[in-house]
Image 1 (spheres, helix red, strand yellow):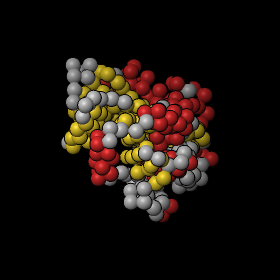
Image 2 (image 1 turned 30 degrees about the vertical axis):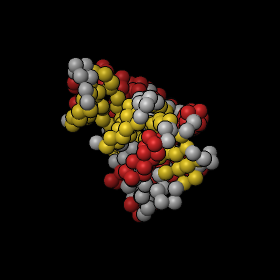
Image 3 (image 1 turned 135 degrees about the vertical axis):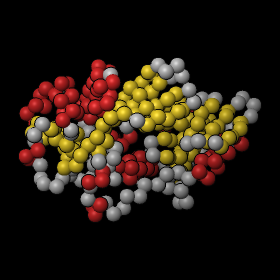
Length: 273
C-alpha cells in the first residue's frame, strides 16, 4: 500500500485482490466502471480468443484501485485503473521513446508574462489522455483470473473468449504502462495544436503560441495564458471537441506542477514550491 498526502486529502493505491477483500461491493463497481470505459467508452480494447493470437504478442496487464479520502477520513472517490506491463514489450520496435515535457524555465517565464501584463490564466487536465490515441503496434493483453471473473460478471457475453481461465484482449489505444504511450500522446496533442494554428517554440518543444496566447504542455496538463479570456474559452471548446473529458480551472489561485500562481484584482504574485 502507498499513501500520499495532498493537503487535506489522502490517496491510497492497493491491489485488486486486496480491494475486493476490503470493500467487495464498491471495489467491484469501480472495476466494472473502468472495464466499461475500456470496452465501450474509449474502446481501448476488444476481446479475442487466445488461440487466435500470434505467438509473442501477449503481455500482462495490471489493475489497481485508488482511494481518495478527505480530511475527516471519509472516502471521497474510488477509481480503478488499468495498466499494461510494458516491460515485456520488444524494445527494438521503439528505439525512440523520447517524450518532451515543458521546462521549469518556460513555466516561470510564462507566469511572469501573465503577472506583468495581466493576462488571463487557465489550466486544463485532459482525462484519460493516452486513451484517445491509437496504438502503433499489434499487441494483446491477458487479464488475470480475478479481473476476468469480474469482467464476466458485468459482460457475460465475453464468456466465449475466455481460455485457460483468462480473458485476452486486443489493445487498440495507447494504454498506460506501454513504453511508447507518452510519446504517442505528445505527437497527437502537438499535431492538433499545430492544426489549430499554433506555432511550436524552437527552443522548447512543449511551448506553443498563437498570436498572444501561450500554451504549455506537461503530458496531459495544459497551462494557457492570453490577454483574451474568450480565446482561452475557444481553446477549451476545441480540446473538449477533440478529447472529450477536459477538466478546466479558472481560479484566483491554482497550482501547476508545483508553481503556484496567486492572482488578485490589483496585483499578481508567483510562488515556486
